[in-house]
Image (tube, rainbow, N blue to C red; front, top):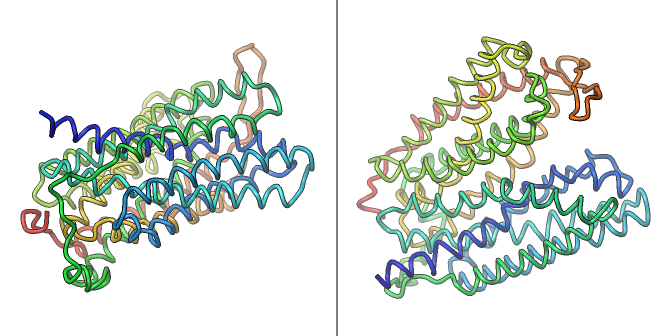
Length: 442
């Protein structure tokens, strides 16, 4: 009974505290326009803060994976300090930008704080609880990691309404105050997670001679194409997910659901979190965990193809069937995007063992870093290059009419790029990543 309790107190609860805090990085889109207006810069300029945050998340995970491997207490403390410091610093530079409209220093300060400093907190905070969870839940590794990573995915759904309420409550022009408050709240949550997180007492790290061969040598215990395949399909899944998710609000408006954007965004976040938990728990029952990625890519190809063939985004307004398949595509992509994250550490442990899993997982998260720069930007380039904007009337709650500028054919063109990438990912999954015998490596 004590051991069962420890699984939750020493692994699951601290993992949720850490991941539910750092997962709020995805809330940037909620207040990016308000920040841009407040500091006198364009929304496009402020959006780079989010891209940098994801990039440095992946790169800090790649370079600090060995720190996490050696000492989860040090890495989780680094995560708490950097995440809170980055958030508070972002608040300060927003405040400074409000006093000096159009100041490049304010924008650079936000990039450094939200992108670089918070990015280090994101990377170390993301990695720190993963190995601990797999050690405590040895027989249900997928369920355990899925639970924690689901916290990362659900953070936006939980925090978004709270942040919106805070922005209204604090008053116009007080967005920087919200960052100060959140810095304190998230530091307390993450510090509590840091104090609770602990590996099982019976676990002994592999001896130096076992680890001495290094990460590259460990990866080379299997054909190098095997690891390259895992990295590439992870990268493609994130790139496609971000490409579609970044255009989600505008796609929803195109099919005539402008008034339900907030609700649909929340439902998408639930599918994102559910995919992280559901796909990883399902993978525990499979001989080859890679089967989950095959399912994710097949489902993504099928629903993307359906929307392409029916021109669902362009012709969806007023057509219930097309509205349903477009929403189904958004929900499937969100679920697959989340499931791709939660299955990576367990797939790697099946192939390469638990000895250096934090370091190998960290290096693999570099795929997230590059996808964070390419996914959104690819979709934006396609939308800005192809198709044309049209006016869409939207009736507001007070009965007045608002004219929205949308590019339905441009969003439709994004699907041509993502379906090609999904097909490439499926081929990699089938022919490059070979089955792993879990009973020998777990």
